[in-house]
Image (cartoon, rainbow, N blue to C red; front, side):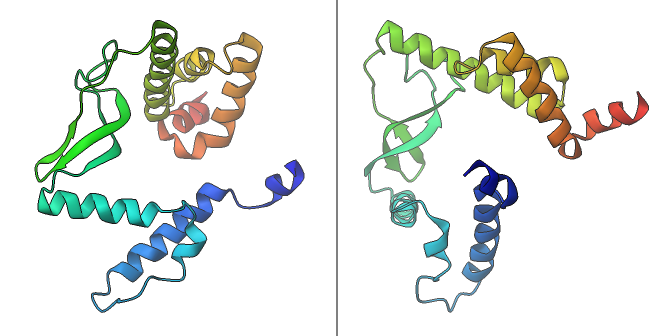
Length: 174
């Protein structure tokens, strides 16, 4: 399986290509049927959920749905701009998070840990800074070991250097 994965195009790249083709198809106002290409995208019921969300936003129906939103104080112990997935009421002005019970301490700690990793990873991805990449990997709850973090840092920067202009420029100079 590993060898097959190494030889084939990553699923994320396939989905991105399918999304581009679907968006091009959706430009046609005469499109009346579900494109067959949508079946290759995956994500069971994704289109139904997306359609329900758009309809609720357009009508301000007040439907309750589960979506990703900024925390905004909804989950105690997380930053306001942390992304959280939770039940919301969909209004024309946008989603309004429904009140949530505080997370149990052991769950809150894990969620905060992952949120810290996500912040570091986002900053590392934008900057290409090697130290931030390493810190993000070290903060990841499934990695957290210096030897693994060091190896993955080198591999990520080597494989992703073409997408990190700042890092690629430093490498050419150095």
